[in-house]
Amino acid sequence: MKDVFILSIETSCDETSIAIVKNGSKVVALTILTQMDTHAEFGGVVPEIASRMHTENITMVLEETLKKANMKVSDCDAIAVTYAPGLLGSLLVGVEFAKVLSYVYKKPLIKVNHLIGHIYANKIDNNMHFPSLALIISGGHTELIKMNDDYDFEMLGETQDDAIGEAFDKVARVIGLKYPGGPNIEKLALEGNPTYKLPVPLSDDSYNFSYSGLKSGVLNLVNNEKMRGNEINKADLAASFQKNAVDELTRKLDLALSKTNIKNVIIAGGVSANKYLRKEINSICEKHGAKLDLPEFIYCTDNAAMIGAAAYPLYLKKNFASLDLNASSSANIC
Ligand code: KG4
Ligand code: ZN
Image 1 (spheres, rainbow, N blue to C red):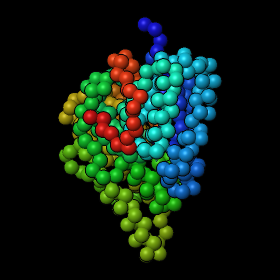
Image 2: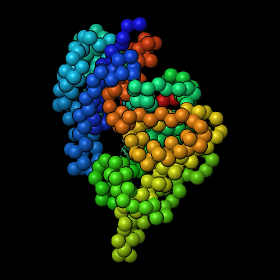
Image 3: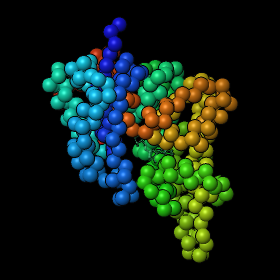
Image 4: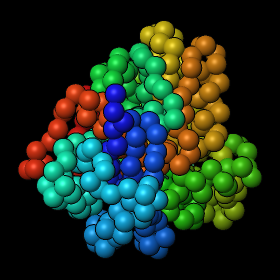
């Protein structure tokens, strides 16, 4: 079979990224331009600034990617783009850019759900095995999904309030760490011990998650200690929060592995870059004799290579989008 090259575009949040991916699993070229430093000044992503920066940078990111690959747009077989979920203004920049490329170069257009992209990050230089349990842990989502086959998803559980990444970012802000909070909490937690007693998120028998109680627990603890004039040990607090947040995931994964007897686990989304989390999830998988697939660090957080990987099964099925494709801030996987 002829090799398939997909030019893929990701602009759902604060990374402008374009990749060329061969046969859904080999990254020929990838460029990620992050706006993180700009948004850090505001303590979080400012949607209006994010979309303006995508508009300014996207052509340059395309040129850079084509140069790295030593290819032209016309050498590619399809144009794939993240159309949902995410910041609407940011998504629209990518979607419109993809539509123009598809029209001008007469290439099929493929629409990709960002979360499915995170799952297919596991396909890069790797293979996915089914059935599997996929744990999606990002800034906006915390979901446990059963994957029966390519693009065959069954929702087992999801967060009832905040997403895990959102909780990392908010707690980081409360203890005075910069955006994005996740990596900074991870770094600080290495210097501390989980000595603080914090609320246990959702210790029930469902596959659902909850993070707002844990987040409020940290907030209350910081306020109470401040009022008493006590100094907080920030490293111990970071370690305590991280432990409780990860325990919530491992408890539910443990339950799902026991009940379903599935032997493959995938983790996906920005929070899967956390090394403590990777270690803890790995030990739960070992306990059940399950195979754990982890994306390489660069493919954990937002990038266009995962969009190219997720677009490939759609290309094979000729599941193409029309030129009236619109972006959407929300979308479910199943
Ligand atoms: O998947 P992603 O890049 O964007 C979304 O689709 O949301 O995930 C971003 C989230 C942020 O909340 C960020 O703080 C978190 O992933 N994150 C981490 C780590 N790296 C990124 N959380 C904990 N530990 C990390 N090392
Ligand atoms: Zn993401």
